[in-house]
Structure formats: structure tokens, C-alpha cells
Amino acid sequence: MKVFGLAGQAADIAGIELTGLYAAGAGGLGFATFRSPRGPLSGNAGDEIQPGVRLYQVGNDHVMLVVDGVEHRLELPARPAISLNPATPDLP
Image (cartoon, rainbow, N blue to C red; front, top):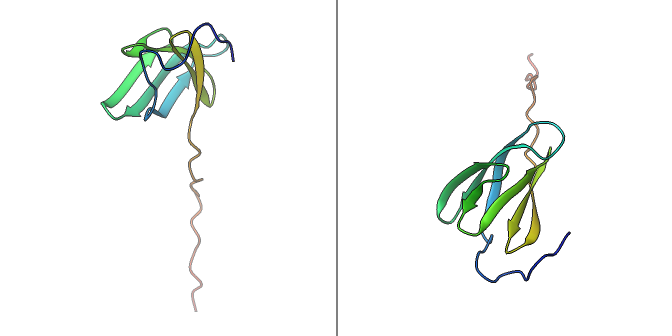
């Protein structure tokens, strides 16, 4: 983690949850969606998603946010796998 400032001065990422993303290849480009106490958020890499919080990079399973010059990594929560072949009940 690169530190360019002090955390927690003006903006806060508490309560922000990553809900979806699209990573557009290498280089951290893409967009992401979030859930926050203020409501849904979304943005492209480089956008300010809420005052003082910038979506810096989009990865395959995470995003990097920058708050007051400090990078924060948010992981995409693991979702349970969905079976395409549901179990067939035993028939007599």
C-alpha cells in the first residue's frame, strides 16, 4: 500500500461495500458499483464516487480507492456458487 497522506482526515470509506465490477483488461481501467450508507454508488476508474473518495483502479476481484492520498483495497465479496444441474430427487 502506498501512503501519500494520513488516513481519516476528511472522507471515510466505512460502510462502502463493493457490489459489482467490470475490469477492462490490464491497467486498472473499468467501472464498479457500491452500496453505501448514503445509497448506491458507481463510477469509472478515476472518478470521485463520493466526496473525497476516488475509484483509483479496478481489478478482477477488487478495486483500489484513494482517500486523502491513502490507497484502500476493497474485495468483491465471495458469492455462493450456483449449480446449473440441480439435484434430482430420487424417484421410486
